Amino acid sequence: MTCRHFLSLLDFPSEDLQQLIEKAMDLKSGLRQGQLSSVMKGKTLAMVFEKASTRTRVSFEIGANQLGGSALFLSPGDSQMSRGESLADTARVLSSMADLIVMRTLAHERLTEVAQHSQVPVINAMSDTSHPCQLLADILTFVEHRGSIANATVAWIGDGNNVCQSWINAARQFGFNLRVAAPIGYEPDPDIVAASKDYATLSDQPEDAVLGADLVVTDTWTSIGMESERAHRESIFSNYRVTSELMHQASKDALFMHCLPAYRGKEVDAKVIDGPQSVVWDEAENRLHAQKALLEFLILNRLD
Image 1 (spheres, rainbow, N blue to C red):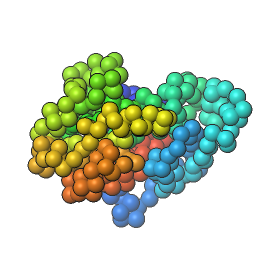
Image 2 (image 1 turned 90 degrees about the vertical axis):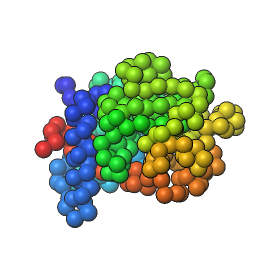
Image 3 (image 1 turned 45 degrees about the horizontal axis):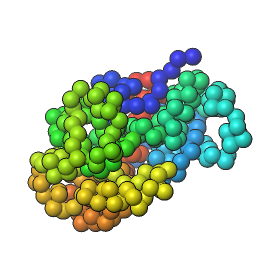
């Protein structure tokens, strides 16, 4: 059985992604007015998480509930995968009972294998390659505060990690300019950059990246699974902290985003993340609304 999955922003055409943002805004407004959808009534979201999560897990569980459905959470020790059951067999079983599967894993290849053997839509809740759900919330947040992100300039400061790579995909899909400043040796995947169609450019100079930018984005220097590298990374990335001085080189009304968790005094100063240009709390809340829009789309396969 063929079904539509959301493993990358590139899985959806730009038009569908734009409609997802609009639907998320509608759902957010409706929730404020006490309106709840029943699109997932009688349906279950199976959540397979092999890595820790706060915002992604909570937003998917609450989102499924607010759409009238339910969510079943499986940690690494909760299923027979911990005893060697194959991903293919797990996908076959889960998709014979659940209506959607959301998976967070270290290796993107595990996610694609689940999708290959699933009868229902599979959603990437973060892999080592990308974090597309985060970007739906980020774009939604920018649109709420500044309007369309098309032709805007976004600066990414820090590690060329999975979130950075999703920002590169987003630049291509939403039509904005992305400047990535990362230390040499910590750049994003060159194939992902090459596929961006010149919407993304790289340098190792944070000051050049943020100059006149409409949005400045960063992330933790040490991603999940890299804890043993923390001390070394903090040394390498010490010049990539987003400070008030760096933000002053961006546009005067530039926004600041961080997908969280944040480590003040490391990748960002407290004055920035807790300051007036920061929209990180809106960004975090918008995980709920963006993912509800995604769940609705995958259930209905339409957005009207």
